[in-house]
Image (cartoon, rainbow, N blue to C red; front, side):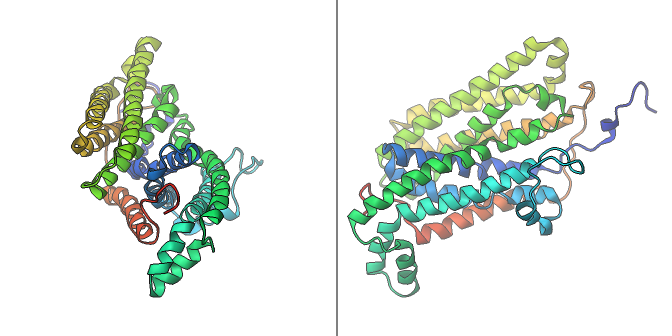
Length: 369
């Protein structure tokens, strides 16, 4: 028997069938890795890391739409998102489809990233074609774009820099997409009051991106780690970790000072928020130590993964357990093959990265060698 006023959404099931969004933490980090690759290429300060960042970024970013397609429930109609995007408000369909905007940004960003990769690796592909044979030789010749001299490669670099600049906008849009999607769910009082959610989500995903790079780079070059590659990325990771920890603490303070009712409503999220702060502070300190002792690099990444996983669980699951009134709490029920749905897109991204690493180099000298 119900007592008191009954809000309509109290009977609605929360979006707990969307733990596939956890895959976004890893897959959207591909966009952040491509942002890092573009900035490194433009600045020239971390050029050795550009190939690995680019291949990891494209591998994850290329499959990022698997999450939205799972959300649609009708993936066979996904092509309509590109052929008939809902980009303008009409009397029949008011508002704008956020995923339609992001879908176009994904297509543009992926094309730009592919062009960036081909141009930056063109001279290497020519050199590889000289020693390869069979199908591999043909593939390398195609990707060389007939750039057979260092002079031609210098000209290609100018185009690559223009593409790197153009790449920043769609990649930043995707870095902000999950938080934007959550904020449009205006029925959720936690998301609506989470003032720092966009910047926290973006910074959190940036932490994941650097953690992935550090982990992959360590196991790839374990016996020949280059400090001029590893140290700058560890510093970026440290800055990201301390930023997420600080922003999380600031959000807790905002809720506490906002009003007693807001503090009470968000109290179920507080234990994990403390855990997020602890993990990311620990990742910060370990990354500082790892600058001097590189063998600690895997620990940096694993601790960061634990902290960002806890953060995403809080944002995506715990926040949905609070009812519209803020006075009741749902019980989490994860149905179906949610774990498989979460892992599958990540596995697809890793598989694509491994395929790309066969065709393209994971390291190129600054002069294209």
